[in-house]
Length: 167
Image (cartoon, rainbow, N blue to C red):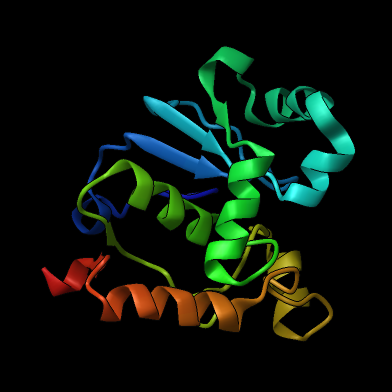
């Protein structure tokens, strides 16, 4: 699951189990009551460079987790993902796909709309959604969405990943 995922009310569509929670320890991230078995944190390389090890204080506060209960992906690995995708400051979803490809034989994705159909990015309030809808705030504006779509589509075309509906 990614960032502020929701299960309640969607169990028939998305199931009830969460084994891995991918997130970026974003400012708008909601603290979880039930913490999944594995928590993987993707911090953009430029922030990792600037913050160094002090990043963990921010991550711990935002996730309400001890450093032993999450894995922050290294700056070297984050730079490798950017090089692999030919995009800077990847979305949590694309980072999650890159990580999953390294850690699992089969990767199936679901719900990736790259902000095309979704109502929000990290913002869940009605006010923020309104600001996004009228163009004051741009969804996913920090990301190279078109390049990420191209990358994910190339993985799908090469059968390196599958969409859930393809199974």
